[in-house]
Amino acid sequence: MKKLMILSLLIITACSKKDDGPSEPNTLRDIYQGTFWIDSDQETLMTFTPDALIHISATDNTICFNVPEGTFNDTDFFGCTFASIVNVVEVEDEDTLSWRQLVSAASGDGCPPQSQEATLTIEILNDNALEFTYFAQGAVQDNIVFTKTTSASFELNNCDTFYFLGF
Image 1 (cartoon, one colour):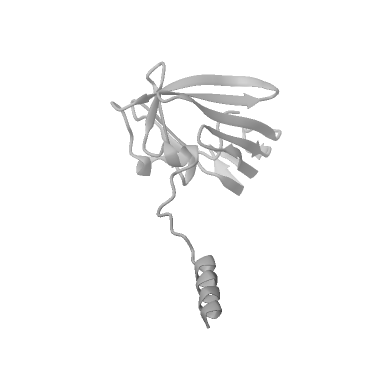
Image 2: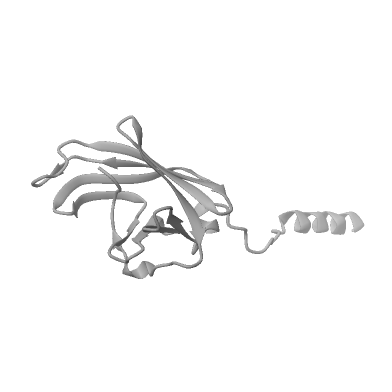
């Protein structure tokens, strides 16, 4: 009987699920959600949420947009119709968010006649700075350092959706 009770206790203990409570944020978007960053020209603000890759706004509020993660088919964007737009995360950890952007050729006047691919990377440099790099056509197209700010922000619910950056 004593062996049976010990065996039962071992089984119950082994099968019990340990609850460590809420887990700590472990991705850049989780960690820096609600933190605002500004470029050196004081013209562009950036922030993060788990439901979009990036949110960007002009400091004068003339434009505000987010870039969603996912695949979007037959998308009308600035008068062009794209058969496919894909934003897929390649790396996301505490210090880095990198995604590949695949954009099909578009129909419409003045629209891109061929498909294009880019890699966009955000890397935390230190507690107060991040670097945004836009790589396309075999070279860095843009590289901007943003610093953390508490004096500027924008309303995320007023932003448009931009399915891709650049091109």
